[in-house]
Length: 166
Length: 166
DNA sequence: CTGCTTTGGTTGTTGGTACAACTAACCGAG
DNA sequence: CTCGGTTAGTTGTACCAACAACCAAAGCAG
Image 1 (cartoon, rainbow over the protein chains, first blue to last red):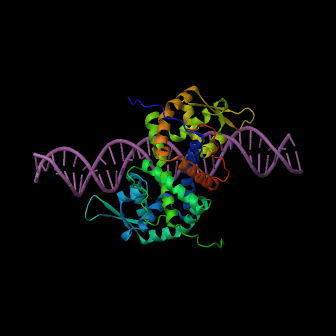
Image 2: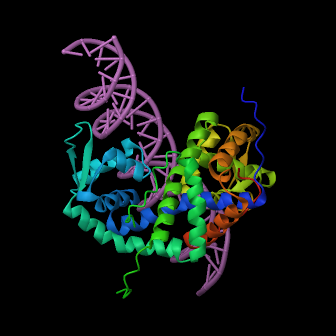
Image 3: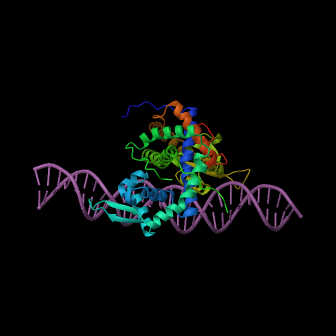
């Protein structure tokens, strides 16, 4: 059916890069989650949601937009936002102009929780990611990851730099 | 107690790199898992375990070593290997020289499952990761990730290039 | 304004991972 | 040889995410 050649194997340089990429992809989320949960009682994903909201006009965003920006499926976001709402960190309301849509808004308590969590999180990110990198390495890393993202996320929704995530 | 300064905020270049890094770390595992589960009935983590074993002498490795190489905790590996054993892809046996240790060995069926899964997986890796990268970008990515790994995984256990993972 | 399709979101279930507690084997000091 | 500590691994629980099924509002054809 798909009369394609056997794709060529990875050479040694590609293999090393690949092993390192999956190692980072596997371990980094755990590092971030562990620090945030211990010191702030937040998941890294919850932190991202709060951070996105804190930077939005009126601290308010649509669920669908949030799910794209945070690399999450909509069901996942729905569950998480419900828990955040139960904890008083976020409020939900029906959007006036489209009664299907839901606006998630960061509450004052949510903002306070984010502000309390941010310094420790930022320190962790610096320590584990940026401290060991030179400026040139940061640029090179960013460029390579950007190229990968065009394939992993063809719609190109993810990395809208809206100023504050960390 | 820890009389440290507020760590400096991320500048714009760092922010972009950071957003892209967490986007890749969040989405890439899902892409790999989805393809492998649909086409081969394997998790990416299960695939890694089988691949590590297939490249080892006698297709046999100790649980602890496997857990380090695959970036997994020991409890996680224990659960997964048990399931793989139930499916006949792996066999476990007590190590003769240390009766605490367990040797996991790839069975013939396990090797067959790996061989069947490999081409599709390799194609996915090429398509989503290496196709959009130049050789220079691969080298730069690898170098930056290596630097990050020294912090995320201080013991330096992860990326022993044992030839075959993908 | 009727019916079909698409879009936005929620809910239930299932499966996998983390964390903590536990058992068994090894090992070194007395 | 035995006793405390360490290492290797398993088991149970609790939580989080993926997937599928579902509901409601919007859009659009006729």
